Length: 187
Image (cartoon, rainbow, N blue to C red; front, side, top):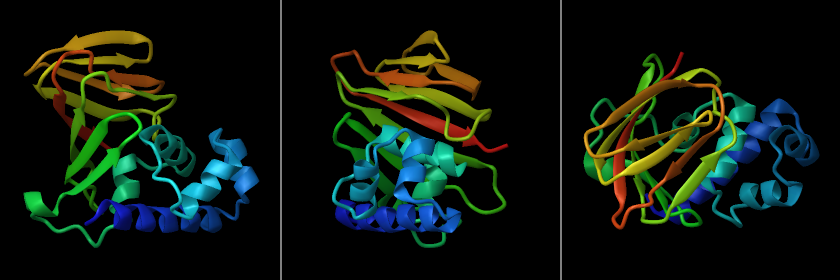
């Protein structure tokens, strides 16, 4: 699926979610801390939302980013071939997210591959779902991750696991990109 097509389907889903809750752009802006103009542009696919923006909206709507992104795709199959895995890019931060094993009704876990280019820095002010369980396994490179104020330096093959209640920050400060697997387990 092309990035423009993903952005258009995502924009439509964001507008649909707001309408389902009966919120105006102003009410959603108040709840999410995102400006009305940015929300409006995201809902009209005039901008490609950043990871941080999507995280804020996911927190308001009570879903993970993977759940939101899976809602703009067709019904997930049991077998997800590499060529069929959804890839989303945050051009502003240098973050690339591949939904390796997307969420599926009746299953609690999902597997995501993350890639950060050298110098990339992605911060989330809150979890999409408070208390969500995450496991981060570094496949290549080095990842600096701050979870609720505690900084961790991970190298290839290191794994960090936690329940997420507060802010997080992912940084690639090395000379090469970092690639990691993220396992998300819904409660």
